[in-house]
Length: 307
Figure 1: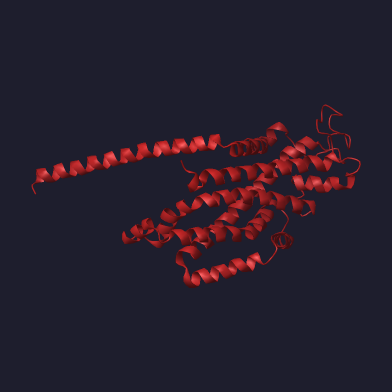
Figure 2: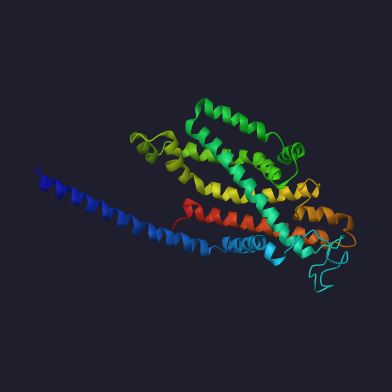
């Protein structure tokens, strides 16, 4: 072949590659559009996102909406909601603004939920991916470890870890994350076991890709949809667990949390029930929003629901 012919062949292959790339981009655009429309058409997902966004905005702008320490005593004790315009939701037994506590409590609860879910997802995905991809004695050993954690009640394990360490926000998030990863590990393992013999994995092996590259770039992206759904449930469970710990007074005394507000108001449950009802409603709404988001993601990301 002459030099001119080689140049022509190279130009032709380059042009073909560009055409294929353009076709791939044009083909991906409608898929993204359909996916976006699916998100917007799903009322469950939209409702969950709206409620969750409200709490996220409260957490982000808590310092702007209510500057200063929410634990400061700013008014007479046990003012009912609407009794004083300066305190729309009243005050607690120590004269602290209930609305300020609720807004700042959103920050603590969401931060613990996100941090604990991130820790649990990281550990569970590493363990589940290793067990599902390699199989054999690696799978057996890691699954025995998963079973060891699952035989211990989750809340009891969290209480023990927090009791051993210092009851601050970091310790609580770490404890919840360490107790919640086995579910993710089993889910990721099942996904990897079903995908490791797929054609695209065999093609990657034939191209000489390393195991780490196949796990991270080939299988993991295809195994993520159910993991994303599980993450929303993990955040909700972490918020409930943190509320339970705070109710038992195993919380950071320098931070306001919804569970701590419920624990502090239980002594006045008959005379000032709003002190426990308001943070309880906030917890229920936050958990409901996360469950709605999870249900919506499950419907949208389900391959059988693709148009």
